[in-house]
Length: 408
Image (cartoon, rainbow, N blue to C red; front, side):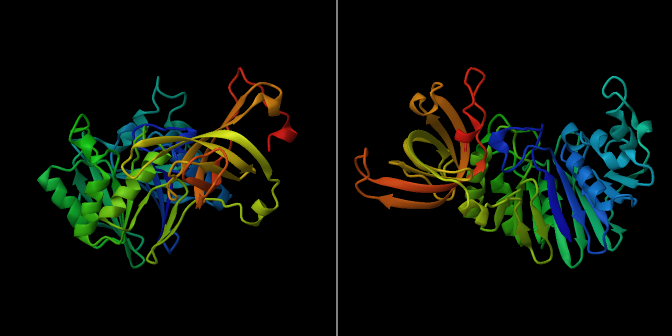
């Protein structure tokens, strides 16, 4: 069984650079069984990219997939109108949900495409579509046993447990702790899971404050469930739109202090079960990096990052070396070697001859070393070698781009 994450963000898509490592698309997971069966969990905006991937994979061959929805809030169904396999004849998509308070699956899915919400309705879709309202009894689906349980969420929601290929995968998003029946049901569902994907949209402090009653959980509750239920791997999910990459790194670090086997869901991340291998969707420069042109310079850099307590820290530094994928800078502040750093590099008019130019990056430290007697600094100084994971932003409209040969 292979699980791939196509959307991990909660509430609303956030296509922003500050969220680029974890991703900004709303919930969508692909589960592929060893026998080739395709299962889709939720249909947020991440469904669009999954659809394009499936068309590339299957070509002219028909796509037969099973879609399971946890509930009908927009961030979990908004990708359906943009799922290209639905528009192709010969494809078969079987939609499933657990009936709640008389809501009908077909009406909930197709209702978002009626006038005036969308320019075309579902009659434009050539694929065969069937809709199944399930009860809470397990079903046998192509050698996979799929179970569900209700969650504590406004207008209700369900979690799913998939048992297949000798492994157990549990998907539990949009749930708030504090309701004893629901707290027990999610623990029953998660027992012995190889992987638990769990809602961690809010912090424990937010759940005690103005986010109480909004239907979401925290990293702390996820860690507790994983610990109590013998879960092998916990994946934090449904990231809040306001939580950028640096903040998410801090939440993952806090969770690991309670339960060591934690990761944050990121778009493109894949998990292979039962081996439990996790492959992040990261492209490393490798040998290409060694062939890049590197520029030695001394220009100011401003740093921003979050410490282990989630507090924002800032410092000033000096760039010593820069290439397309890497940077080396000095700073008197203590930069954490395991947390991304936001960098703002200022190229002065002496270099550009077009006025000061500001470029912004996100960098992941790969080496931090203590320097003695560094020029222009009194006291301890760190030298930080980091890999750039977000390319430079274009200068603002009032700034001019440097010539291409100088922008490397």
